[in-house]
Amino acid sequence: MVYDELNRKRISSESKDREEDLSSKEQENIKSSEDLSLEDESIEWARKTFQRLKEQQEKRQEDEKRTEKILEEKKFSENIQKEELVVLEQDKYSSQLLNPNDVEISDSIEIQESEPSLGQFDEAFTWSAEVLAAQGVRSEDVSLEEIDWLGRLRSGLEQTRRGFVTGLLEKFGDDPLTQEDFDTLESLLLRADAGVEATEEVLDALRRRLNEEVIDSKEGIDFLKKQLLKLIDAPIQKSGVKLLSPKKGKLNVWLLVGVNGVGKTTTLGKLANLAIRSGYSALIAAADTFRAGAVKQVQVWGERSGVQVIANTSINADPAAVVFDAIGAAKSKGLDLVLVDTAGRLQTKHNLMEELQKVRKIIDRLAPEAEVESLLVLDASQGQNGLKQAMAFAKSAKLTGVVITKLDGTSRGGVALAVSKEAGLPIRFIGAGEGIRDLRPFNSFEFIEALLATR
Image 1 (cartoon, rainbow, N blue to C red):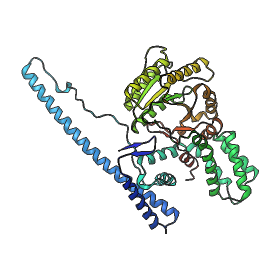
Image 2: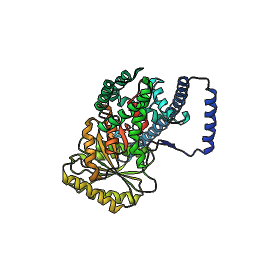
Image 3: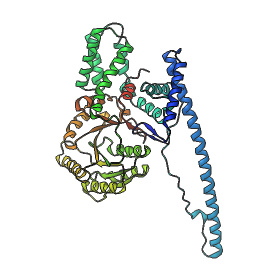
């Protein structure tokens, strides 16, 4: 069974009957817990989920041990055979001694990235479980990958959340907010780099609500969550695509663009790994031919994920020619996805921006039927500068979405709100760590919950 992380679902051959059975069981569980408080229900749901994931992990570990034992026995058998071969060779050619230690022993074991593991049944787990439950996910459908990611996301947004939520809780109380309180709230939003337009929209909505009734701190946080969610979700809904993933049966081409230092190549490598883990076939076009070492870096990422890399190591090779070869190779092999790494460029460098346009024209000419995405990679720590990049790149690159990286190292995570409101671009992926699994499809509900987590 494969967990498609791009579409947030398992790929399995289980029948609809089983789903219906599970649904009826769920209804029975809900009915039997009607006498519990909402909090008790939530804890019970999380505990049930934890127990099932724990059993799955223990089973997987047992299977891995059995597999490891089989491989060790196979390796031992191969060593014995090679030692016997050495003896035969020594008997036949006594003058040519062969050391068994010199014989290469190859096996088919591939180096894998460490799988997510289940920790303790603690506050972090219950928070993650509650976020999934709030989205209508059934306990039996929760995956370890989702729990693991939510923990990383919440931890990654710690710096942005610190002080911001505390300040909010101090301002929402039994008494109506004063103008001074609104000024403080405005300052908190701007300090998180939410942007002027997003901040004004949220404050206006809050003023209207408070004119109607007095709200306590919890209601205030809930109302703020709804407003931020509405704001950040608007470009995604307008695009008509909730989660970006390659469309099966068609060639998909994703260009990654942006300035130097935002993590384009690393993001491309993580996307390649994410696609492979989710059951898609992929190929990388190393079209950053300007930066020294860029091609080698892409090739390393390709090796880590088992993805072929099309590259030209010549000095100042034509990026468009690399893309030309990559599309040809992908079409001949019937691959799902081509990921294109492009040179980092400033929006003021017209020659590089023209090069980007040339690459786009090559794609449109060679694969007019392809699903093309042009994704701007933004470093969250750059805040409003990242927003300016988005606006400048939009025309030349025909941007269709944004990937926000390095959320774990900044207090400016609110820039996601500015990108959504002012640039009007849907956020497609976010990165909250340096690990190969620390990039995931963007989920606006989970992002806002992690941003405003009160515990």
